Length: 153
Image (cartoon, rainbow, N blue to C red):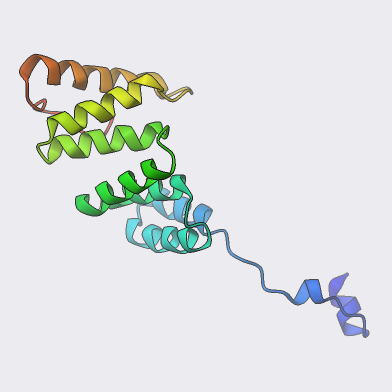
């Protein structure tokens, strides 16, 4: 219909406005395909449109972790938590990165925050069990667990 209106003299300013891309969904799709670098570009564009969106920052942190840019991942998790301290996934991811960095006290703090308000959903139990075991290991050894990763068992 819009084509015919434009062709025969009708005009609609709304039809000529460019539409914004959904950079967040694009980034998530790129991540599912394993293209983390391209996903990070799309996340940056999404963050430009929504600079205080903690979930975008959390997703960026995950992508930075996958590309082994751990300092950037930690920075983005921390920024996400500044905006939304109840973001369970950010506490979880940050805890395991801090373990890798040799900060068991920081990891313990974030594991406890994660377990205080764990996520809900079909996969939540495996993340809760993983965090609980890591916290148990930290308490018993006084140091970081040997084979703990941010990936669920």
